[in-house]
Structures are given as C-alpha cells and as structure tokens.
Length: 386
Image 1 (tube, rainbow, N blue to C red):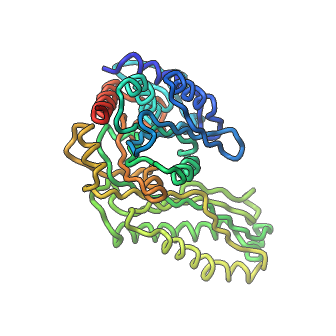
Image 2: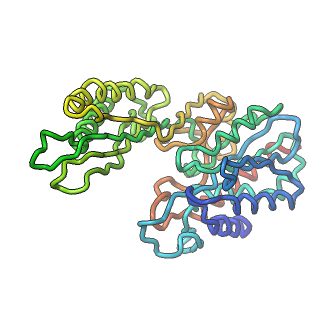
C-alpha cells in the first residue's frame, strides 16, 4: 500500500485549489519550501501576470544530464459536477483516494516530492530533475516558458517521464491537438423578412456540418494507427452559441472545434480546407446581402503529438522501472510532445491512475497505483545511484 508520506502529500496538494483559471503560486511555494528543506534550490518561471509559475529543480550532479520527472499543477474545474464530498479535501474509501487532481495528476507529483529525502541521501551519480508546470489543462501553455529556459541551459535532461495517468504503463505516443474558435457575423432583421438578413446560426451550422464531413472522411479514408483506442485523426465541435430570440434573424454565432491528430498527420491541410470552404462557399453568399458579414477562424490552443521511437533508450529504461515489457499509445494529450519537439528531449508518459477517472465528479486514484508509483521511483533512485 501507499506510504504515509505520499498519502499525506497527496492530501496537501489536492487541498490547493489550482483550477487553471486560478493562481498556482501557493502550491509552487509549498514545493519550493520542500526542496529548500533538503538543500535543493528551485528555479521559477512566472507567467506575464505573475500569478502563476513553473518550477524546475535538479537533485544530484549539476554538470550532467539526468532523468526529468515532469507534471502539471493545474486541474480542471468542478463547477456543474455533483461530488459526494469536498473535491479539494481528499476522501479515502475502499482503497481509493477521492479528490480533484488525485488521478490527473497530483498523486504523481506527491510521490516524486515525498521521495526527495531519499533522492538527496542516495548520492546520485546521474541527476533527477523535477519540473512542475501551469496551465496544462488549457492547452499546455505554461510549460513553453519552462522549455525556453531548458533550451538555454548548458546541460538539460537526457530524458523525460511525464507522469500523466497511464496505469503505470509505458506510453510512447499520443495525439496532437489544434483548437479553434469560429465567429460568424451576419445581419439582423425581423424573422418575417428572413431573406433580407444573414442568419449567422444557419451559416455556422453549414460549417459545422462541413467539419462533420471531414471527420467522417478521416474515419473512413484517413491514416490509421491501431495502437490508439481511436485509431484515426478526429474532428469535433464542442461548443456553439448564437441568436437572441426566435423572431430575430441572428447576427452572431460562435462555436469551437478541435482536431486531435495522429502524430504522423499534419492538421494544417484540414484547417486550410475549413478556411477555403468558409471563404469560397459561404462568405460570397453572405456578402451579397451584407458587405460586413463574414467568418473569422482563430486558433485557441495547440500542442504537438508525441511519437517516441520504441528503440529509444528512454523506453527501455522506463520499462525497467515500471516492470513492464510492453508499450502503448494514448488518445489524450500531454506536454510530452512539446518536450520532444521543442526541447529535443526523448520522452515517454508513465504515471499512476487511469485517465477514465480524471475530469469527472468523484475523481479518484487507487492506493495500489500510488504504491506502484512509489516502487517505480525507488527503482529510479537505485538505478541512478552509485
């Protein structure tokens, strides 16, 4: 079962309400103090507002590359969800710990930081680096400042382990993501004179149906990788809003869509198709009625997929730590693709908990998963010592 130290630290970290819209500085300060107690300095990288920060620290030799354990501090909101107990106070029942972030992904951070005394005492010959980022849940935004700093260092990590929930299985690939907001501007009029207006909702609906056709084409004709649960690039419309009253032709409509692409698929040609359809098929008809009508498509967030060669040293190394012979791929995204493509650091994903338990009411992680992560970390310290 999980150690009392890890269990207590999970409870503490979950107690920090670090929903992405809020500051994470209290949690970062707490972890910085934990490092300082062990004589380990930490480097912080703040966002432009000064309300959020990444943390980076190295335990062991400073003059050589080591193994990076990386996780994010932010969690998704709880509003609109029914919880059986306070989501920011850990509840234990039936071998599980319930609370926002237990699975995604404060338990991994808790195990890593609970292991600090053992790391410091181990006389590491290869260092262990620790990284904690902000705003992962809203597009992997904060880690980019961390990566800019890593790229400027004389020595950066030799490999990276992202501790997202994989059930402690070794993951070598995940999809990338491109998210967009579409704003359709039409022309209002009384609904009895509908042809004299430009119905923004109708136009948005045509574009959403076009996206649906692209999604169907990807499913039926696109590249496939059966290592993924969903083995093709997907396109999904998630939010839409427009109009003011039934008897008014709506002037405005907006919606958001995303592409989750296989790492081998370039999403830009798909985006180009969407833009061409809007420009060549929809806007001319709109502007015959109103010259001010139009469609704006703007990016919201993006991150690359992860595609680590199974023959990379990081894969066999992490398999040994996890006691696993197999590797797999996941459909959800992580910061791993950015570590790989932006910083050139070979990366895998391996952490406690299951993604199926994340982002939902009564999120939970089993104590067995926490214990497996502890054994993983113990093996890491042993491998890098002496």
